[in-house]
Amino acid sequence: DLTHRLVRTFPSFFGPQVVFDEVVNDFSTSGFFSKRWTFEEHIGTHIDTPGHFDEGNSLVDQIGPENLVAPVVVIDITAEAAEDSNAVVTPDDLVAFERRHGRIPDRALVCMNSGWAAKVDDGDAFRGGAGFPDLNFPGFSIDATDWLVAKRDPVGIGLDTMSLDPGNSADFAVHVEFLASGRYGIESMANLDRIPPRGALGFVGPVPWEDGSGSPCRVIAAW
Image (cartoon, rainbow, N blue to C red):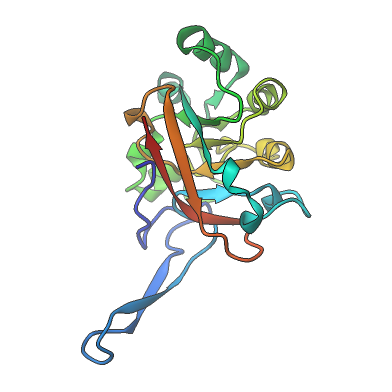
């Protein structure tokens, strides 16, 4: 399971506490239990659609199922992230991965493991600050995602931090350019250190709600 449990206090890009719930029906009054939730589309382990940063591009209910089952590869930058909170995946990291593990498959979900998932229970540590624009965490470089689009045609990228771009990004280049290419991103993934660097098959399960720019999702890997 590459998914964090979506708790009320899950760290938000803009600061603490954006998940709220209330009991609508309980056993004592209604004979059954149900709740109403209020939260942003982009919270917890979630998907960013092409239309999140590119007006008119596909939204969550338009992502075909053929793009939601894909080989998963994991690029490990934990050593770099331990030295630099805003470390990024580079083309050199991708080339080094292929030299060690073999070619990144076409139409793969290419993920970054920075070790950041271990910080998820501490909002300020996971954000690397109090909230936008005070953020510091690893991400993908635009050079790396350009390399992937040109050479490996991925279905998407994923990572264990809360943004595709590093926390100190001022232009969100990966969001702007990679998503505009018709691909998606998955943020705040869990357990990327527990699956093989390649060989797993990933299953991505967003909620296909109408005109959604994103959605919390369940992501599973099997191998």
